[in-house]
Image 1 (cartoon, rainbow over the protein chains, first blue to last red):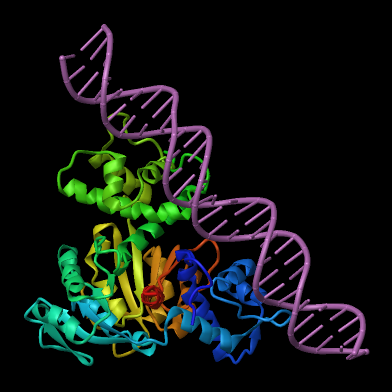
Image 2 (cartoon, each protein chain N blue to C red; image 1 turned 45 degrees about the vertical axis):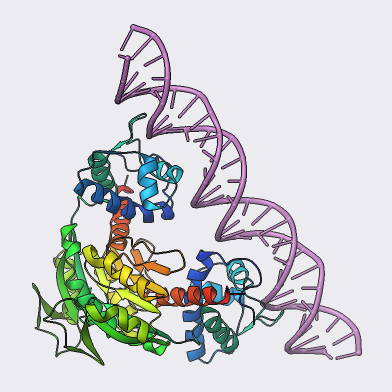
Length: 216
Length: 216
DNA sequence: TTCCTCATGATAAGCTAATAACAGACAATT
DNA sequence: AATTGTCTGTTATTAGCTTATCATGAGGAA
């Protein structure tokens, strides 16, 4: 079973896949059976060309003169994203954000299973967080290895973030999702996503300012 | 005082500004006085060309044969982003994520001031969240107008997100930062940032899968 | 069955962004 | 003051993405 038709798929395209998946999910819920690239693209606010082009990176899913079968395409994109797999996760940093993510229900629904939550603060260790007891960060490395953890989520202060990442990498983790406001460095074979929430606010700030200056 | 040299600045460039700001902040902390585009670009893992190109959208901040004064450039980029302004914010949805964001210290430090937290759940209304008492969503519209709220953060379930956004728009809000897993629709003059956390996990999933298939 | 319409997949054209190259200005040094 | 080397701002080039176009084949109607 082949993943991509040929060559690498551009990152911009990959980032759009979850959006396609989301909109198709909506259509499935509404029992829509078929959809044309034009209709779907209009819903999403993109061009039909781009939609077709994107899909063609992965294969031919539509039929001329008919369009796409919603259910099929939905399943197909789920497969492309890899949602039929299950991944074990840990969260390191049981502060507000760590707790919020731990309680996020949509993750387990898609096969992302939270197996442990860690912190360095003795006051937090031992507390229950939904199904997970908060563990001492000293046990992190061993835990990752024993429980076959694929994804590590970092929600510690920025000073500790790189150190936590190093432990994860040493333990053989496959991917890191970092929420600390620093760019973590990891070897190239590790999948890394930096989530800089404060950066997003700054983009909003810039755009607000830009708008303000437009009144000339 | 002019913002951009001419024309519109591409979104890709704008998205990089906070990153520049972050790295320059590090240099400031380490009391580094000057830096060349080459050095800074190496630190950030981008090309020196791109860095200079990006900065040239906004003006000339460096000196030939010398480089950039770290402190000056840091201030300058802060100004470009608009960090000298203050913006009032509200959070709607006092669940885990809403609470986490309410307690995020870095926002107020940059002039993003949380003025109120709202929810529809009677059990939550009246509770204290750091400095903010959780208010009934019925008072949201009035509050936005009276307190001159510029930015609305949405952390409600997806079913309620569009409705909340509509109230915000009606009340005259300037920007919306949406964490619900739907694409909210707002008039074009409203600055909108959709933050789809689950999407990020799917990108990680795809990349993990891609990596797995590379062992042929 | 045959013809017509529709909408895909593929190719081409157009556009945007990233990298490379370079002339000129400034700093540093003697 | 003169000279060398550095490093910017800018222009040129290349690469990457997006949009437009079109031939083709499937579906549906008569």
